[in-house]
Length: 299
Image (cartoon, rainbow, N blue to C red; front, side):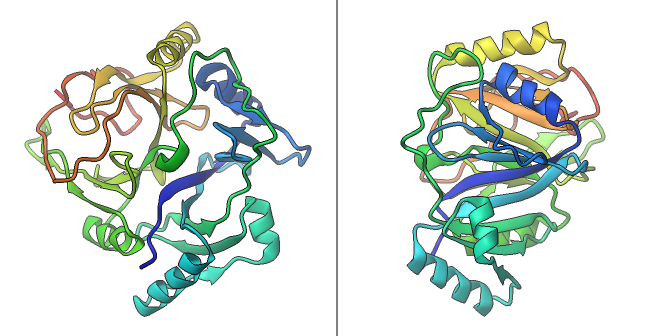
């Protein structure tokens, strides 16, 4: 049976490439690659050609997300699975696959309308060492765990869960968060590999397609350095440094140049084999800058 194995890449629509170049390199530590196309930059986190593409089209939102399958057999089987489920998709042309630096590509949308791609065979530039945008003690945690995780806008949580289950992800509600208005938020988290979750949704109405991207460092000192840089540059912090209950990662959330959030993290545990839920985080994650869709009490 064909299943996705990782969240492999993201495309982001941005309005200020120069600001993003500085943010990705100087704050996050990613390698910025400019191949002279004029309308895009590539962000490296490991030996892949890229993990993120910044497209200068002004939307300041998620442009697409790419889910990987193992190879051509799984790619063909995924097409059969989607067709049987009545989910429309198109097969990317050779030119589109080349643009994504993959061998094969499907294009579709999830129930929330988020542009979704399923691919196999990414270009991995083992001949080009990864050069971080600023000095780092360790690396980014990618490999079989993929780029990280995203929280997405979904109007119908149950439909979204069914869609991602079809792709091969597993998960459920992992928090019951009591809100000031008396409601209980029940966000849904799903995983497809050792990473505790690769996609989540169910935080309520969202202005953009994406609330945040989380990525992880392998060394705690890199998280600390990023935190220092964010504070020195006076970048908005939506959630202060804290430790989640579900993935047990030490993280903080800060604004990116497109007005949504990147979550910088370290030390997440792997996905447990059995389901659990939580009513609060372990410590920290106090609310600071408002207006980024994370104005919820986690303690």
